[in-house]
Image (cartoon, rainbow, N blue to C red; front, side):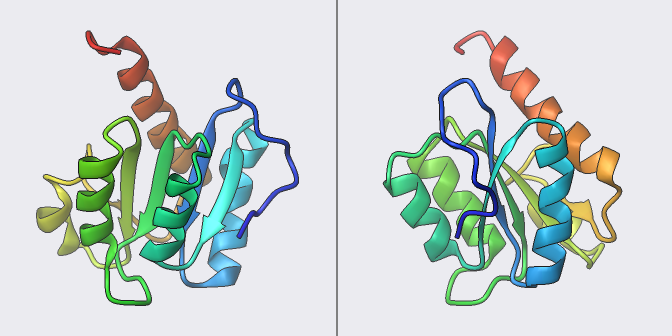
Length: 137
């Protein structure tokens, strides 16, 4: 599951990237990694629940809406919000119509494919900054 060999520490921001297509996952993982993030990868919602259940520090779950398995990205986002409210979620999709459904599950709506590297990192950094400066942080 890990996409990197970095050791985990609480100071390194972590992103869990959930993308069924391994080639897309590898390319996308390079964007935040090049900006100093620790990046782990998964294919299904079950991968996310396993990582979060293991106690690993994850700041952002970056997930495709269309996932393999019984739970799609929308269901995953709801689960993360319910069980791990300290973890932010970015949903992604090639389908623009997903924006309406995703608007209440992630800030700023879904990130559409094809991804622009700067936009991926900008969205992750924006969520981290909002969390850091929130009144109850």
